[in-house]
Image (cartoon, rainbow, N blue to C red; front, side, top):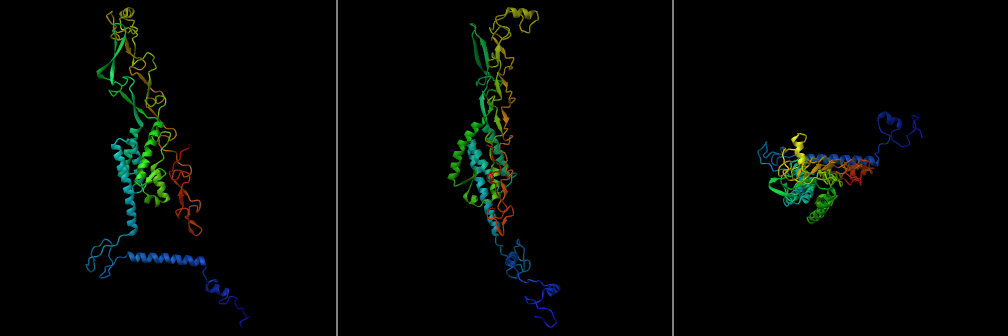
Length: 426
């Protein structure tokens, strides 16, 4: 059908497409369902923000003048102003932080009690747990964190060090006196006035405890520790003990932060970073290689161990061809004062030699953890404890909804290390 001017009428009615373009109107004036939903959502957000800002404005109940949050009287009419209501979000956050702080304080107190009772392993387990819980409210440089770190380091020094019998005095703590009897027998007397030069009277020397012994002791104590934490109503999370209400509200990031702070002790060195030398069994010394050495002494070379003067040696001394200390014959050998023994030339009277494997240090750096005391970093998350959510690929959204796997965060707990950030190779 044609109009009088000869132009055809649009099939859709209204303004023809050519005319719509000239006047700047759209051909399809209607919104799609998706566009409508986005528009409604945007308007809702804007309205919510507007009313929230409006509710945050404080006005005087008498003159309706606006006043700041910290004001106590109205600057316009002088009326006493009511206290603003507390912010629910801030109140909830403060309550949660108080709960974390209380939990850390409880374990810290338990650690100090166990330390006072000389239960080093139990104190170390409590202090380690308190350090991890403390990370939720304070950093590594906080006063509490520093004190907990010092406590754990002191406990570790006590745990990895033991004692071994002094090889010089054989545990007596005093120097030995060798006396040659008239019948040729040798008698060893312990001097009560002269302390052993090696152990300074202690009768023992320090040594490093073997890792298998440390792991056994820790496992025994951990069974009691877990039972105590369970009796207090705690729940465990990869070795970390915390309150049920705190465990239920943990986000993946918080879980990883807690478990990274707790750590994953290396089993090869029991978390100490060092290993007892296997050659010297952690003592730092080995027995003197001289088969004739007894308590740092050996048979006198001048008298052959008899304690009596040697005529041939005396003649050689007189002619200055020997280093012997006496010149004339007497009733006893003046080199060894009649004891028949002199200081061992090999060990210089120490009855032992420094271990050639550890150079007398008693320990070696753990090769598995390179001295850190922790298992190697997880190869999946590189020690972060978190990985990109495979469902939403880190966007936090799946299609048009919040990702159900990561709850919109974009990250999930590492499936390889469970958030610890470290994982043993064996």
